[in-house]
Image: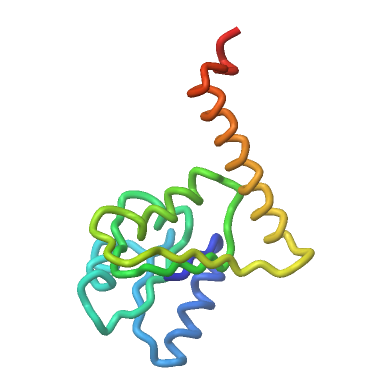
Amino acid sequence: MVIARFIPEIRAIGKLLAKKGIRYAQISGEIKARDAQVAAFQNDPGVTVFVGQIATAGLGITLTAASTMVFYSMDYSMSNYEQTRARIHRVGQRQPCTYIHLVAKDTVDEKVLQALRDKAKLAKALVDDYWDGRNPFNT
């Protein structure tokens, strides 16, 4: 499973897969038959790759036919990131899930990944403080 932020990236990934003769399913903002794409990926053993746009493939679908997710690119939303990861890590998944982030040094992708890590640390600290009785929202 490959996830990207922008439609041109989705198109480029799809074009490369087609050139290699690899059958794939795709969901992005420009795809209308999303249920058919999900069904093809989940049920057709010949469809071996799912390509999804983070904003449209991150909610309300089950993609447990995959156990590896490659983030080609990401956005700054922690919610989008966690929801997208949850497409493969859910009830019905029989394999351990692996997440790969394609990030080059000194690029915006590196900054996005660091921002997501910082948000995760902050969320964990807030939750831990809340459950430890030190709720920062009680003043």
